Amino acid sequence: MIQVDNLVKHYGDIKAVDGVSFEVPDGQITGLIGPNGAGKTTTLRMMAGLIQPQQGKVLIDGVDTTREPQKARALLGVQSDMLGVYPRLTPREQLRYYGRLQGLRGDQLEQRVEAVISDLHMANIADRRAEGFSRGQRQKIILGRALVHNPHNILMDEPTQGLDVMAVRETRETMALFKEQGRAMLFSTHYMDEAERLCDQIAIIAHGKIVACGTPQALRAQTGHNNLEDSFIALAGEGLVRSGEMAPHPEP
Ligand code: ATP
Image 1: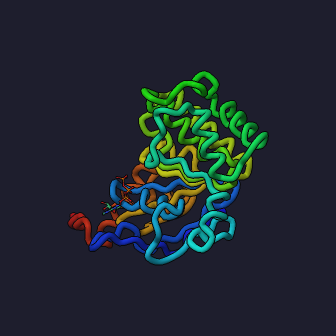
Image 2: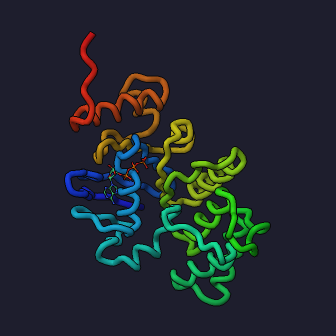
Image 3: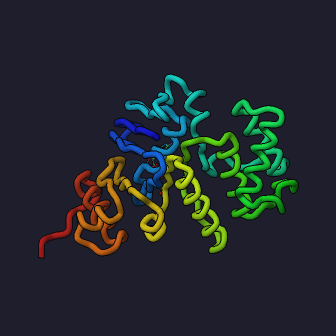
């Protein structure tokens, strides 16, 4: 379980994340959705311990990411292409490298590397240098190294962006499997149909603030719309109006 409590990150006058709180429960998929520039990536980066919040905290299975960063990292897998892939190394070598960084050694390391290669159907590319890999192939490395230490909690930043139909389906099946395994999972996406289909709960962020959080059904009911896209536009738009970003529509 992940608890995000009152996170704040400002860049000068820009309130990238402005008091964000939510929970990512075990055995559920939580979606973080919001317009461009809403603060999704900044929130995920703070949760992953890649940048420090100016206020607030993140607890991974009760472990504070600022006070015990190494312990928290061991409980968390982060899939993000912000970290890039090493072109000169094969996927197997990259998985080993990340496994070692997480303290895995010997047989245990090799077993986990094999398990990830098998789970993500990577056997055909596992021993090729990553130079020239397609987007989907790079995504597999990025997801694989997030999983190599078998974390209970998983963060994914736009995991299906730019993937072909087969790869999208495979990624969604992997996410459903994680859920079945009881893991706590948070992902960001711009695809409303994906969020609606996969998520048990959705947090909508606009201008650095959570403007709504609930099941897809609850968000639809809250706005009176029969699909998530219209609900999202209503809720995210309201958040922007409240923050002064967007003028409200004039009354007819
Ligand atoms: P997108 O959907 O476009 O990826 P996002 O919701 O992930 O957007 P963030 O990348 O978190 O949004 O950015 C939130 C705000 O913070 C934006 O206004 C962005 O320009 C700003 N921001 C993020 N990182 C920095 C930085 N290092 N320096 C200055 N401003 C930043």
